[in-house]
Image (cartoon, rainbow, N blue to C red; front, side):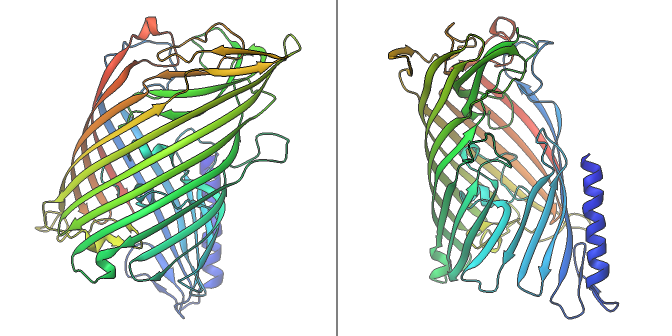
Length: 487
């Protein structure tokens, strides 16, 4: 299906190029694209392929019957994206980018129109990257490590919405966006939720004209409501369940080792026991996320840090459709704080200031490309990243004039035996140290070596099978290498 839609997209692009560009139009001096004879219209073919290989040491036992998404694969095509972007009439930008791998059934990764008639106040509509976090605004082609930090797992990323943004003065940027969580409605309430996010950045070095230096400060804020549909487990290693649950917050270990090293879920409707059954009532979730950014760079050295503070409040109708009883509403309030500190040095002398633009870092371009006597760019990097979840002492569900309290338990795999049981599972805290060596062969190719060691505050297990089969672990080690080609 993905191949068919990609072929259609490329055919549309070819037709557009044939109809818009005159016979004397020119090809672009670099990359893959065309420019119209008058210079006002352009189209570029873009894409990225990332292939990862990793070795894991988790301390968990191997089991035949487990969800394939619970642990990392030794080999993985991390990203395979193909698309095109360009400009129409000199100041209207567009992009369509497809996503060809992963479990997401939506082919379109990003698709937007940007009206840039005034650089101080541009308008963007469609599906695009929401304005939050320095890491998120840095392209996946250019991030310093193979994976972004724990804090980035809280960020909305690509969503449908509308945004106003600009750079009204040198060294200053702003962006304000309203967006929807998810592609489509999850209920028939005509209330799919609305969220608003904003980000402001300031580069004092650019403002004060300090050469070869970046003094970046940024703040972000994301708040609103959305809905999620509780569901029963899809794990075939268990007896089919009737209890539905919706995930409100989850973390995966930072180098994509063990999935759901922490997970908080709110209980939903009780339905006929099945695999992957969906609750009749959606859960309503309110979210607040705050972020602080700091990046200091001079010459080839960069220090970068971010702090994220999030809070979630969820409420779900719990109806027992088997016995025809209303169990009342389940509520869950939870917080999560994350931060990271990273240091990275360009051994071959490339300047970070040359890679900084409009409140974010772009790809480092080697002084000399590998081949023909060049070495490419080499980087050494280290990052420490943490998360900490604050759980309530209990989850309260009220119905028929009575109140029942069910205690959340770390490392609990099965529910407490009660119908309508929310839960928090695995480690509420974790710290990951990652060291990296990056080799940027040229602007379109690089190889990344990472070694990550994670220590969990509570022992964790796979949440897709029984702990007796898998066991528990308090640490994880992952050695990995990524080969990347982008254009």
